[in-house]
Image (cartoon, rainbow, N blue to C red; front, side, top):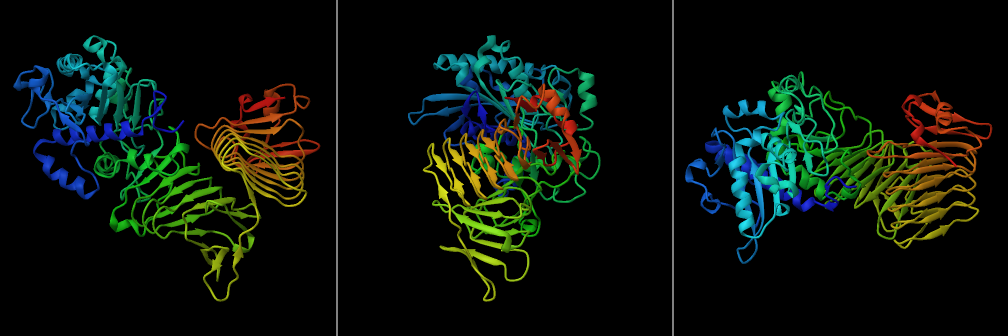
Length: 601
């Protein structure tokens, strides 16, 4: 499911609203500094104003005395003025209230530091018990229920969100049991994805630093010293905010702990001052393929560095996923985006972008502007194809560089002299007087629904497009590409290249020496009819949330465990050799395989 799926629904609009409300509460809590920070935020593309259609609910409306509100319009805690929150209302055109929000503020003064001791046992939210009860009563009076309430907050405010989520059945007589919970950069996590959606950056030292909300105070204090990059079911755990600090290979400039101000806190600051990362992900061309555990690198570079620094999944001490498939997301300016070893997705959005590609099956969405792709290879090895919708595919016949899918790209450069091309009507048009053009190769493609397409005895290039397609190469050296949907690809005879692309696909190699790439989704590599030739699987369980399977003939192995044990390590790959052929799992260690990766049929 896409990353912002919440309670079974597409929650992109809700999470953007929640972030806007959380940011408003955060800025309001900065008191006298709010004006200064507001200037910085506006310069960085942010705006601390409330989202359109929302307003603050007053103490009088809630039946509370004025002394519950500080000089800046924030409701304060039961026993301390340091905890702060706002009650906000979404209004219809006639002024009626359609939804309420509880927006908890983050740390704003020294008094909040003491409150961190109450986070691990969810006691911090008790400071707002009176406010939650008043808001529940107000909601009931105007015909709203807990399901009409959005609970949000950033930093310490995000922790309050998780506290209330954990105690939703207890506080205010359970009124908030069905509320929607969105926590941002929260130091503590209530780990129930059916209740709360947590979002933050792995290079933000505050995010998840305390860990699970059910720990002890002692554990929380110990964990708060160093961020251990913990993973949870209710949190996005592989988001990188690629800002000016992160661009330096020395980042995070020492231990990744709460006391490392420059190296640890920079993403916590840019996370609230820059264009919201949730908005960037939500508008990406690749949103439907980004899951909770996907690696997502979001450019937040300044104008000073944007034109010279490559945004990529760089090796850093705060990362454990370098080399894994990643989503690299640019800005509406001119970006420099670079892929890694795996099959990456690079989104330029606006601006005249430069995208560098190496190995792997990469997809580029250039977006608006004049975009250029650099490919580390020779144009003479490339077969170029253009589909009916303008999408261009460049396939390296040597198998070294994989398949490149280009959308809204205007120029492609390869290594060497006279290898710069414009994407023209009839092919790749060489920009030099001395180089040759490359004509679009012939192909066939589906209708965008469920198609059945078969090749010939010769070389075929078949693209299923959207829908659950059945593609058969038959004989010859074929290229089969399923596109979106749950597709079935059968290479047949010959040395074929099969690409499942998005969706849960079935890939059948057939005879010959074949290359199989499932793409995103949980794919099946089906060898139940036998193993013939050398079959190389390039991305077995490589993508986040993949649950790929290798299907083998039950006559070959007594059990799935026996099949697993038959794989040996060879040159960094897991290899199965039989009398008739072999299976190579690129970049997979045999010790990383389990019996659950195999199915006997």
